[in-house]
Length: 96
Image (cartoon, rainbow, N blue to C red; front, top):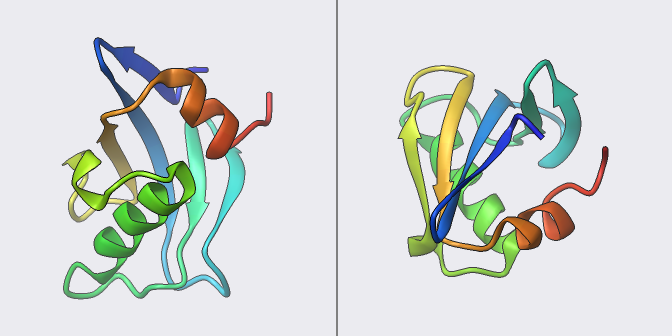
């Protein structure tokens, strides 16, 4: 999975974000990134905050275990998660 890279005791996720969607959900692949639709609008950091909260909730982790590494103002984002790669595959998106 090119969107999921193990980095020691954490993983990095390459994501394509669609803000202001009807609902927040994982929407499959978008090139080499995992596409996530967010109900939050892309203003004042609301979409970024909603993204990090969504990932933490889906992975059953505290919000502090998820951080935005790049893409503050872009649809393409890199997120680091302090968790095992298998947990991400099982709980975030199990598609092939």
